[in-house]
Each structure stands twice: as structure tokens, then as C-alpha cells.
Image (tube, rainbow, N blue to C red; front, top):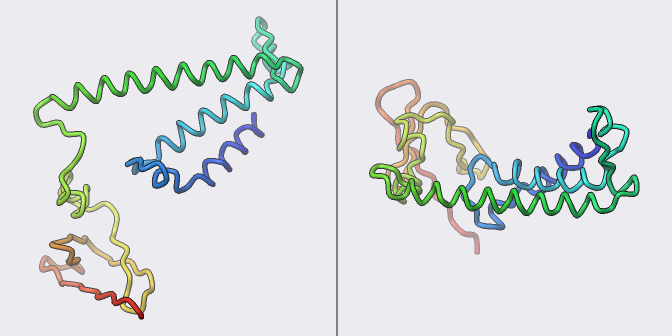
Length: 172
């Protein structure tokens, strides 16, 4: 179990940019962690399942391919396919229902996405804004940050925001 968990964790960490590769809008990385992690963990269970461990419940003996039961890998693949299909269909149905409920939206408008969902949906910012300083170094602006037409406005403990503009020029 620990080997499967370790390998799955390493693979999920290596797939850091999978949302961008597959064009998935998943800010919490649910697909990467639960989808990919679950598929890989289930598949590897079919390979490494140990008869002595599965016998601990007193009624079942399900060894994996490593213990000579190669059919367990096929069973795990069938399980992965069935769970994936079920998850897709149920999610699609629920999202279609949500789409037609007044006031429920699957996507936010472009302005809200640029401004930030914390500010748009919750009227507050939960995380400070990271930006590039004029020297090109990542800096974190303290205090709430809002965006108006691409210009960051921050307040440093006061109610009046100070405008911060950073110009970026391409070097030729």
C-alpha cells in the first residue's frame, strides 16, 4: 500500500501542468489528484495486491498480478472504465441541470475572471497578489489587491488604494 501511495504521489506531482496540457479549468486540481491518482492507484492495486493482505478480512483472497493472478489487472481496468464512465455521465447530467437553473452559471464572465473570483464572488481577496517588480523579481503586494482595466490597485492599511503600474518592455 505504501509503495502504491508513494508512486502515485510522485506521478501526480510530476503531472503539475496537466490542467494546462489538457485545457482543464480546475483551480483545485481535483482531476489531477483524485482522477489521475485514483486511476493509477487502482491499476497498481491490480498489479501489487497481496494475497496475505486481502485475506485479513477472513473471506476474500484477491492476489494481484505480482502473485500470479494477472486477471486482477483486467478486473481493475474494467473497474476504472466503469467508474470513469459513471462519473462522467452523472457529472454531465448534474451540470446540464445547473446550467438551466436561474442564477446558476457554469462559467463566470471574462471581467470577473480577470478581476479575480474571490473579489467577484465573495467581495474579498483571500490571497495576496504576486506581481513582477520593475526589476523582474517576483514580489508579493501586501494588503487587498483589486484590478481595474489591468491596473493593480492595492491598499496598504488605508481605505484609499494606491495605483501600482508596471510596464514591461520586450528587449530586442
